[in-house]
Image 1 (cartoon, helix red, strand yellow):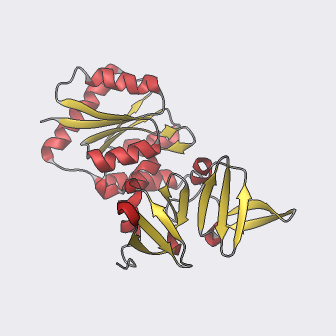
Image 2: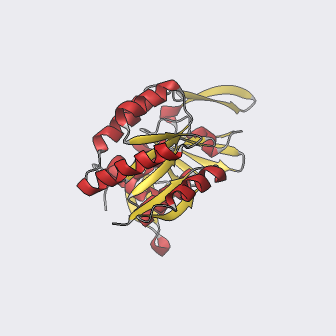
Image 3: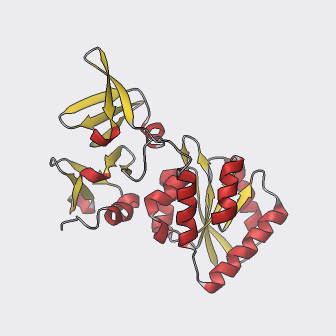
Length: 255
């Protein structure tokens, strides 16, 4: 049995370390190494690996965003790589198949690979445990409830529930809320990490949408897909994010 593996880590040394350890395991084949969330989501969606080594902290973002984008039921086996605090490690102890602490210990990696082989032999993926892990970690997060923006020389607050979608503009983000548009000095990646993934979803590298505003998915030119919002706005949906979006709005999608 060949175990197709994707390595996701923003640190080159960490990717190289995992790759070197797997090089001694003939039943493991690395199909791709990824340095960020977008690459990871694209690879998992297209390469269909059996196993993902997933770094918890990916610069301004987290590995949990990869799972949010793909959806728990579509995820392969996940081995987390982490240098996280005690609280999160306790969550991993209870819910994760396994995790590796940085710097990696070869003996510990061998034990992890043995667990992966055993689970693949039974063809069982513990999605319930992965859901519980996400819930446990999310419970310790505090997401944005409102944004402070400057508008007409005044500081005003925009509730996140009133936001329709967000658009990257270099080191700025345009916030679309009803008929108003606000420009804030923050990157889309940094802002995404502070938004509740149960309500906001990345559609494309340049856009995030409030899921409650999406009314249907429609085909677009050149095989692309568009999310149509309640006000008629059409936003391009990147291939890596289509399955997750369709699952979230499946009860209201019109074709």
